[in-house]
Length: 218
Length: 241
Image (cartoon, rainbow over all chains, first blue to last red; front, side):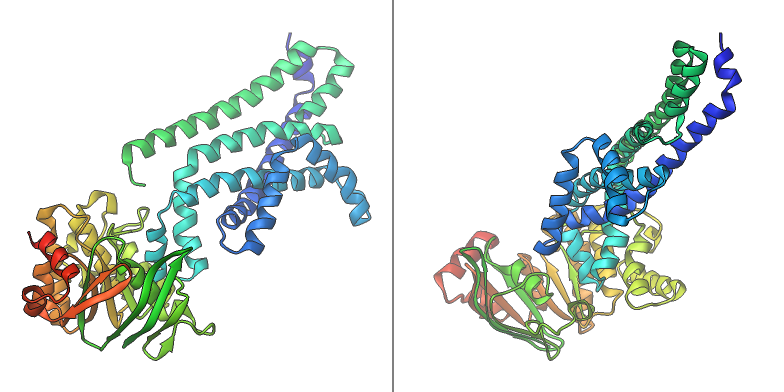
């Protein structure tokens, strides 16, 4: 009863690897851009605050699948050449997830007292040094559970890239299914793999939540 | 060392500072008191360039804060500041709290910075807490670390914003002793506090502020015994009981 899976295992797992790779790019890029977005959202400079806020509000109000389509079909028109589905998907995810990580970090930054920031400035630290050593580390620690949860969502969402033909696991499963016609076992297998990764992730998130509650370090 | 000339500041329509004039000479200790909302803390924040002001001028060591060319970061290195609620970096050990600015701003080696930090911790009486996190220290210990952190940058002037008002009574003395020690060594100090015993002992000048204005200034015992204005009398009557 596992015949369809076993016969196509390397092919399917290869697809899963693509999901993991896409998630890795989305998280690394999304977090980095998210830090800048979060800082922009607490900026007192209007020429930073308003463009960043517009970007965040715009992207948070359209479905991810549309962003994926948009990059895949519109970018080639702007750039002048077709884009590799993986690159296109990675860019879409980074741009999209950065708004979510940015908003989580914004909440983290705003939980830091104004006087703590003043204390850092009063020792002569510059804005950049204060952001690097004080704001970002504290916001990361305080927001770790939410960030892990958002990372899990990002990982699940990587399967959406099948709409632009990316050879990730869901896409490959539909291909295998169209040949083997074993929908139940094939899609159950996909579900179980996603479940395992995400379940581990949510356990890690709970662990940190519990730990920070106990330690009260922050 | 610090000249405050006719400084006024508004938060929207509300005037927090009104024509404040004051000169702090090197080595002077000045205590600022007054009811809450009288602009004391705001004045310190303005001197440190943490808040803008709309009128007048503040000059620190010959450098004007209103001059757009002034590097505020550089200027703040000269002024140490201690806050009411300590404001230690919660994710760093006591040692890292103290050495962060010397290493990042002054580009000191970690070794040199840590050596200096140990001396300072020795001086504020808690050398055994170097590896502790702020959350594991008492309020009095946290405030002493905050003082050490400010001193690590070797400031020319130390500013204290109600350094003992968030402390339990039994911890106030340990912090005041550190401050008195600093005063005796000749540090220039600007202290917002209601600890009148401290004011009497160390202050060269006591300033009473109300509604953003300096209402009265005086020296030690004179200030307490013969306050001139009614508002100062009322205020002293309340806090001295």
